[in-house]
Structure formats: structure tokens, C-alpha cells
Image (tube, rainbow over all chains, first blue to last red; front, top):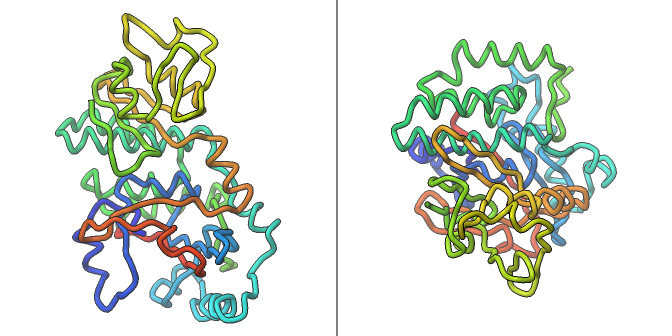
Length: 183
Length: 129
């Protein structure tokens, strides 16, 4: 599920992919699953139960140097769950991990959608006004702060990203879900 | 006024918060009746009628409040965005029940989580940003 409106950019990742890849241009899932960053991986069992919510997990080691996360270990945990149903954490831990969007974060998600609408309609000033307010209300939500960078002509892999990463680290890395264990 | 037909949990209204009853039904799926706000067999009591009705129009910001749906109104552009009901959304996560959703794939074909019922599923939220 691409939390992204840039369909062409997503198409660029699709070589050899056989499972469904969906476009969530309006960030619906960030509301429904309280997702605050990518990648967030959710494991759902045969009875529609979330057994592993919003896990910061990786399929490759492309970002290992930066994240400190070993994708091999994570893939092995997923494999065990698929094969013999071994849960990664208890239901209580899962409930604890996911948390809820705060009222401010909920509001920020709505302002982000208003900003997108205004940007697409050519009202740049109105878009800016709403993006700014959304960023203020959800300062640690990457699906707001980083996602808006390319939409406003910025670079989500440039200086803005590193500034946000520092801000995030200084705030204690608040994350809706099971954060990476890199330390 | 536009309503996004693909995501009933979200609504975007572009002509301000005051809408006709027909528009209320298209955007949020509820109708204002004598007994209250109704959808299918369910009605929600409206304690103060004057707070949601003005000049024969309905105030969706007030309606969203009654339906426990978060709402944002950008006054300058008069765009209103409404989210999914708060208590049921939070309740699903508290009960670890995976919320169903429908989203398009890259070719525009709709897929639902429930298309894959009774199977283990792995969802990856990712992005190009």
C-alpha cells in the first residue's frame, strides 16, 4: 500500500512484483491503522486479527547502514509466523504498541487532505497554509511532514529530511507501532 | 460540492459546511429526518436542531460532531474535510481487528482487504518519499 499520490514513482518499484500494490493517495490507511511512518508492516491472521501492528520492518538491507535494522532477522520472524503461526508479540503488547492518533494528529490528517485538494486546484497559498498547520499539529508524523516535501517542491531525501530526522530523534522517536530496535 | 466516492470514510466538501439534505446524503451517507440523523435503520438523536440546521441547509461540521467524526474546515477556502468515526476506528485497533478498506491498484482496479479473507496477510505501507 503506497501512502503516496505519485503513481508513476510507485510504478518504478514494480519490477517483478506479483502481489497487489495499492495506491492510497488520500492516506486513508494512516487514519484506519494509525500509521505515522513508512515502512510500516502489519501482519493480519486468518481471523482478521492484527497480530503485529505497524512494524518498522524491511525486506532488504538497503537502508541498514542508516537504520541499523537487520532485514534477515525480521524476515525469519515473518517466515515462522507464516509457517507455524508463532506470534512475534502478545496481543497485549500489540495493543500497547499501536496507540491512537491524537486529536491533533487526526486534525492534521484532514488538513493535509485539504492542502492536497487546494494544491491540485492551483491554490498554492491555500495549500501552504494547510500544510503548515498540519505540520505544526503533527510534528512527528512522517506521513504528513515527509510526505508533503515533494508535494511542495522539496526533496524528501535532502537537507529537509535530515533536519526532520534530527527533530524526531530529539523528541525521542515517537512512533505509532513497533519501532526499529537499532540501539 | 464534491464527495470522494472511493473512500466513504473520508469526505471532502468544497463549497463550505452548509449543504442541502441531498448533498448530506451523498457526502456522509446520512439523512436529516424528524427523528434525527438517520442512515439505514439507525438514527442518531439531534439534541439541538438549530445547531445543525440553518436556512433549510445542514451544517456538516455540526453533523460530523454528532457522528463522532473528526472534521477540519479551512475557512478561507471554505473546504471541509471529514474523517472516519473516532470511537469505532479506535475501538477496532483496541480490539486488534484489522479495518477493512478498498483501494485501487496501479491500473485503477479496486482491491479490498476482505478479498483475501481467511488467509494470513502482510500489509506494507511504503512510499516514494
